[in-house]
Each structure stands twice: as C-alpha cells, then as structure tokens.
Length: 118
Length: 115
Image (tube, rainbow over all chains, first blue to last red; front, side, top):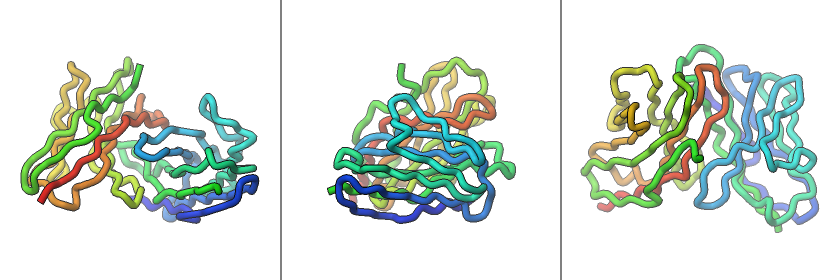
C-alpha cells in the first residue's frame, strides 16, 4: 500500500515554544491530507483537512491560530503547534488518500508523532 | 449521535481461538465504506479490512473477516486463530459517501490475546 511518513516521531518541548510536524506521502501525490489528534486510550479525532494550495479546513473547536497547517506541495503537509502548552501533549497522526485507484477510498496513516510539552 | 459505536472497551481471547469485535454505525447515506484498523502500542494505524455498503458478500482478508449486517448497521470484525501479535487496539471507522474524505472513528477495543 501507499506510504506516509511523519517527522519527528517523538518531540519534547518546553511550554511556550512552537513545534512543527511534517507529513509526507512518499510514493503518491496527495491533494488532501488529514491531521488527527489522539489522547491516551481515546479514539482519533479529526483536527483539520489540509488542502494543497489552499487554506486548511478546521473542525469545530480546533483553534486555527494555534494549529497552523501548511500544505506546501502535493507530498508535504506540516502542522505547527504554536505556543505549545502541556494540554497540547498528545499523539498526532496524519493521513492521506492515494488517488491512484483504490475503490476503497481508504486513507493511509503516518506512524504518528508523540508530542510532550513540559 | 455517534457515527461509530464500539461497545467493548476491552476484550480477552485465548490464543488460537476466534474473537469478534463489535461495531455499529449510523448514517443516512446509501453509499459508505466501513474500515477496521489495528493500532499496536507503537501507535501506527494498520489497515485490516474494508467493506463497501454495496458489497453483497462479507469481506475477508486472511484471518480477518467482516460480518456485515446492513439492516442492523453492524460491521463486526472477526479474527480467527488469534495470535499473540494480535494484541492491540482495534478501531472501526466509516467513510460516508463514495467520494467522502472524512473518516469517523469509534472509541476502539483493546484486545489482549492470552497464551
């Protein structure tokens, strides 16, 4: 199946700093990528839909000024957590749909990034 | 209302036995897709199996099969011959519409395989 990578896999930062997480589709072009957040022992919650060449679409309750999303190319989307606080500590997962022909319309997930804010 | 409901927070199964993980869904769309993902402790989401709303036969992928009961809006995952490596979180998800992008996830079921 298609491959999606994320970098970094783990990051620890001090409160008040900003953290950038990269999501790349390695063998296909993704016009749309998705960012999810998962708290311990909970489900994945969609934060935003990242659209190449246009603004991201944020889910209700997600602060767009805090979680900056940039879909700079057809293979790269970045999520920047600005002025991070301990409550932002979570597991962030991106996904992308491979448009090349699966009838599943499935999403391929990156391996996730575990953010810890001290 | 919840789009996806998984009522079993935790399940135990003896190695080599079969186990069924429950999933019910709620949608008014005629076209939709149902997915099961496995999430081991490493965190990656591993795609297991897919069932389309128009598929008449239950999907199967190796030891995984999906018991699709459309009238009941249920899409239970059956794992046969459980292995120790099957211990993980399992998420049921739904995509609405044929071109829909958004996935709705259930709360997950933690499966533990006992030797």
